[in-house]
Image (tube, rainbow over all chains, first blue to last red; front, side, top):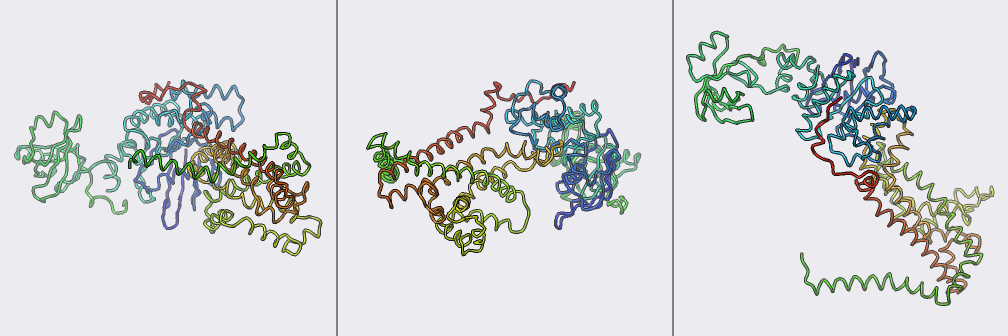
Length: 336
Length: 294
């Protein structure tokens, strides 16, 4: 378990961390999610000891490590750009932490073999980092971090420099790895999809503060404030309601729409179809309000739904939410 | 721009003539004059006590200068690249000073500082002779060769950044271990280059050294000073040519070393060198799909 208490960090006039307190339960995979400059990387680096806090404390597994250098914090750290030791083979890279600790040769060799197997680089041990792809380099970096049996594994945008496809695969692979190894893991990302996909818990940061901490579902369904709501996914603003685009229902018939709205207690929004975009399995329907001219929003339908409605550009439709989020005015003022 | 054949040939001829007149002719003349009386005469003239002493003194000065420049050069480069302190730009300018100042000015200023009547002249009364002794020549040589290691190592340090060092720290490496295992191997090509340039410059330095050397043949003459004194004072023209050839030989060895290293450098930084250790097919994109995490 990691606890950060009242952490402050300032770079000149820029407040990177503003009285941040966060508890990360043992064994979880927690994502620190936020836009760039939100302080998420600073927080991670403070946990690692790569950044000194101006005030506040960091406790890892019951030990106050605020003034302990990174060497003795029992951490594994993975950098966005791999930080591979370029002049060493994959094998020497992974063995580095154990070599520094002067473990017996046989033990190092056994452990490195094991880890290379786990990360799927067994056949690459004599390669140099320059001979690996980005995804392979990052898996090597993960093996290197895991070799020293860290109490916590800290990942700083580990998939940020990779192609979309490789990123997806590695993300899923990391999740499986975590389910097997159970090391307390903290992952920094600016990609809400990544956080929702891989993490048990998400802490959303903005402007050096923590906005909300919770499970992916909690954050997505019950955002504590407008920032979390819009950062975790797109929102569509209707007449009097806010909803996720996939929670919108489109009706061609006014009567049916009104009846349905009556039943569920929501408003009906009249709109015109502006554009239809096919995104693989989904269809994104871009709409504009007929009442507030020019204001646009969009709905996400499945292909089957879209086909059934037979939508065309210029059609008048009636939109109602099947599930709503709080509107800006409904958020408690203190949460912002 | 594509040149016509005649103008291309004309340009090449001009370039070649220029190089021939300015570089090739003087060197060939020296070699010709050196070996004209025969190899035995040449051999004899570089085996005189004065020549042997000059040869040894030149190498001794190089042997003292290089380690000092390596240590301070690397430390200075680290400070310039990694340091955040007031006066960093000033320090960077000072490092370039030896390029701007004429060596003879260095010699004069050293006499003013370390000479009997200089600020630190008291040392001479304690029996430590700086000016007109080995220490003075070493100090002068260090001054003129100071920028090479710094300027070669600096860009490499910039390029490698600090992430590898941070990674080493999180893996438990102390500062010294990180330096020895991560930083030093990463800068070794820049450092080697800097050393080679330092050696070449230290061997060839004349202006600063002549000011602070007593110039006694067989005692405090470097090879450059030997060439000078044989030619100017002894009117021993052949002896001067022979010593010059010897000096040239040392410089050529240094240059060859640099060329060999230069050829090795890109190989070591790309994938080509490790390929000799393990035959490496180009990374297959399909390999990016992680294998089962068994």
